[in-house]
Image (cartoon, rainbow over all chains, first blue to last red; front, top):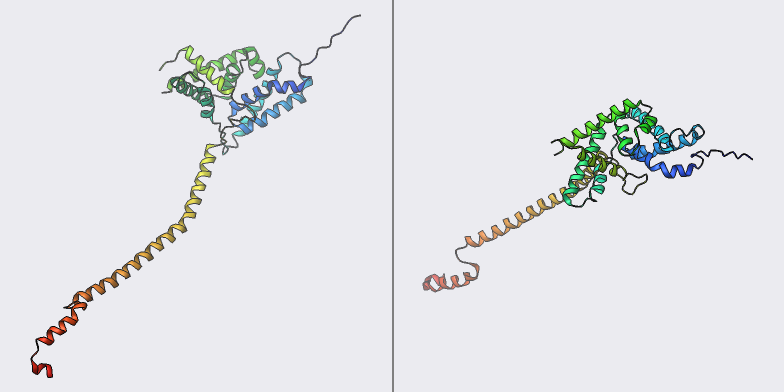
Length: 179
Length: 112
């Protein structure tokens, strides 16, 4: 008797998907927008859209890549509409976050240097274009491969690499300018 | 100052660590808006000044009244002192002066 094994979609257990990937989606959106309220809302929106479209998930890309694709689109749409809400300036207390990480360094000197470096990269990231920042965050924060970034952003591989190169150049320049 | 690839990697690694500190409903909830806090602080400062203004005025008026009262008392004291100084003989010595004057009178003057 031939046994037919039905492939189980990784989205069947959606609660596990949320548990596993919610934080990654949230931190990507928050690092992109620097607006905690918007990040909370868009994370919910992202997971809701993923849940509604779970039947369309073909499994060609990983679940995280698929969720990131939705998140990237949500961030882009939010940034477009945010231009009209110019009076609402998003703010994220980067110095508090930098302090938390810097305090783990071995010496006070290393902690001070780490704090400066973190602040410089955050500042550089804030000054990048939407595409450059997205590529930078997906590569160096979410540790995604170039092929996964291609899937998540819908950009060509060459475009992803070019944006990544420019983003790194900007970060390098910002670090070189720091005192 | 030129930075090496190693330094760039280190900075990106620290940045990664800092972004991984961001949690939904996290305890280390960042400040919503520094500008908003500044506005709130300015509003509180203004309210404090407005609340303190009547107290300041009341205190100023108290001080002015006290100064006027002291001036009046000083004037009265000065007048009293001046009237005492203007006497040729101090009041406790005036009886003695009368006796001395009586002693120096002639009999004719005394009968008058």
